[in-house]
Image (cartoon, rainbow, N blue to C red; front, side):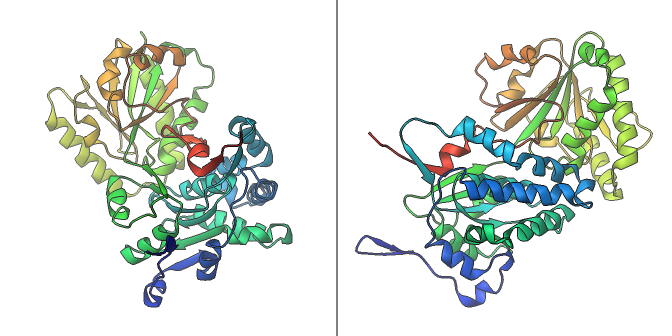
Length: 414
């Protein structure tokens, strides 16, 4: 980027490097047009109606119904949901709100639907969006992209073609440089290493950045409350969706199950038996996953005294019982159905674990108020507390960020 007389001249991309970009939706001309495109007011009527049309297409798609994460996404972008978000976030305070301009999103490579939520957050806040989508060809991505394209064909939404560009490319820094140079906000998902790599590319002086670093999440289950619940199959389904749908790759997926209450052993048996039955029926298991989990469990077992790998008939799920919560426990985590397990006598025993800034979500079964004494200690981690089954429910408040505030510009009108 060069500056002449106070005017910023945004850098151009070498034509040979441009050939390394695969445009999944939009093209280079779309990106160049974004530099001239006006930002929109948040929750613009055309955007809300477009997303509702995408939702309608997905809900009617027989292939989409095989993927609960797509259906959850489709439900979230329907018009009624957008209106509720508008009522929550768009303040009637006499000031004027408008999108920041161009957003450059770097989506995580191992969570299929995340890129779509990031895109929608950008659209709802009035911005044009360049989204680097996962290189892995998840079926969910193709289904969602087909719906986005189909809705854009309608004349009613022609104007939005300048606000959406989905791309794939490798690790070319020159491409990162280009997209970063034209971005008003850069949004980086995918972990510490990705953040460090993308930050080699400079932003404009007034551009902002939102980063979603490596995080982990936990589950707290009140055993007494669980045993009183009449729909334990549903709890198993909810926990399966929180974990196995993304192979536990999502930062929202619980890595450790903490048991409280008096009937821990009875509750454990029912909970894990119900989950195992579901995993056996639904999960597509790869042998390498089993090898990785067994290796991780052995490494955990030798790291501390009295760690026990619970006996299982197979390795569809691995339970590693820890006698205490120690520093570095979450560095030993794995995925694809790998869970630490801890018996808790006092909720304040979780303070060290939750004081870690990497701790993102606590999913719970029981009364959420059981967690309040923990929160009142001033822990530095934990940004969300949600029922099991809701960990992946996206919101404009995420990882402690208010995305509405970060992705809009407030014009003070006195």
